[in-house]
Image (cartoon, rainbow, N blue to C red; front, side, top):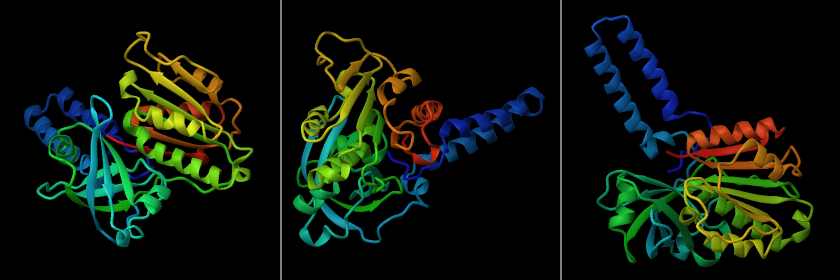
Length: 316
């Protein structure tokens, strides 16, 4: 789920601060049982808030309009991820126009919790086809659980567009996209938008490099490979896939120029090899778990990329 913010604030950091407070009471041998219970209660309450999409994104930009949408496709994208395609009436498309990288609030009948899901398609496909594409990983969080267990073709939901994380409109500038897990969703939207811009006016991006780096635990969890490879036939770009939790069983595609598969985590060394030819002012977009983003941002800064050109969105 997206945070809709580009500030560093992680549940891990929250836990560390609470742990320090709890430890202080414990090691001073004061009435520790009640102190720890109080701290754990506060931690549970805070954790519940951090899982609340509306709470976490309360300061994010949002459209005013909430529009109805209907599910026209539901399919398995991987063992843990469902793909959902929503259709909007012509009259609602302008109200749901979005920037590549943004998300939607989803209001589901019968589900009290509001969902928050990053958009996978490009703004152009909403204009032309009237669709919004989502990819939702299974969890017990009510909106995601509904999508995996009850959502079907014909289901109706209401959506509203929002988010501060989105493509920055700059011509002829290098672009780097780095995704961890389902963090690919908003980055695929940006990648598709970049394709649309290039096809509209190739000269505007004729000197710019485009690189997508995508890490997942298993090969089957690398989503949208077919779509990514199709785009690579339309625009000049490089793709580098990383699989971290399983070895190559012989079924992975062979690495070729500008497309590689690596059985390892993304590292500072591998980033330097991959993006060393990019300018230091490259616009870099990162999306994934908080620890992944913190590590990748540090790697990029270590190789000389400019902090002001690194944009990210953290999900939990």
